[in-house]
Length: 104
Image (cartoon, rainbow, N blue to C red; front, side, top):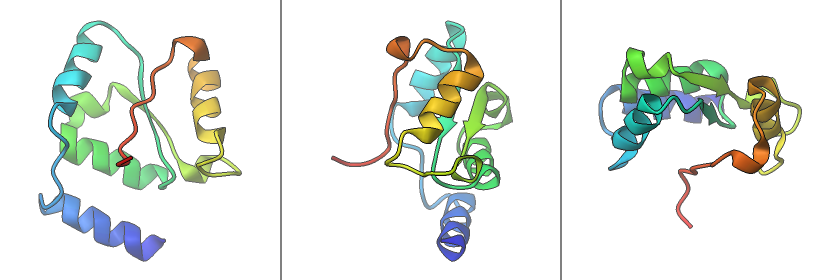
């Protein structure tokens, strides 16, 4: 998994994996409206922070809380990382929206 993460981060750093269309607009609108933002990932915290910083910039990165796979006992598909985010951020989970990056 570490090798895969290293390869992925190199591709991100080289600009070979762009951010999906519409993501920055959605993030900027959420920031404008004061919406709390988080990234929940199975990757480690360092990789996730670097990913957000590289693809969105430091100013946007500072608006996100990062919850990563190395912070919970069970990774996705277990809901642990999401539950940690809700609890840590003091959110009502019935009012949360999750935007996934997977193709369905």
